[in-house]
Image (cartoon, rainbow, N blue to C red; front, top):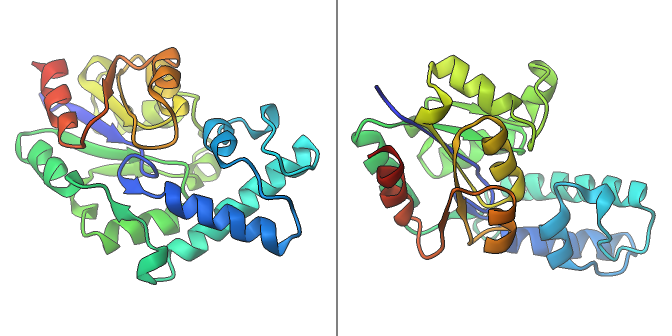
Length: 225
């Protein structure tokens, strides 16, 4: 039976942390806000009401600013301008093709909106490799709770008729790891995105990939024999 490998997008497939930093700086400058702590944002964007990003505003206002900055990032990402378009990490397309060719089913779960997600998949010509996806739009259309709740991963597994033990969740954030563990799937944390290795392990990563994307293929083979 086919095994399922589910990928996060930003910070996992796409090298988007640099764009995030530039967008947050641009957003802050235009609104007269102090330049925030980028590392704090990377660490705490999944729970912005629980972290201080250094914007000098209330936690409630901070959440509003963060989501507005993310919206600006999405607008930049679909602009078609090369310097504003996050690139795939080295080895992504080749590794995805290899996983697909060796019988694995691939899917995506992301906090991105559907439009920017589909734009990125088309821009990099990898959309054909994925059997299904869940985006921020599914929170509304399907009533599915966001990461780190397991709803979207449960939904993908039901759609593709794959059991948790036959599923691996790959991501760069603690939200991805917590979602995977809550859904009883295998979890693979990658360290080239938002969160450090120790945070990923603390959040429940079964496996850590640190060096290059190609090593995800070896980890998947290790998990599923």
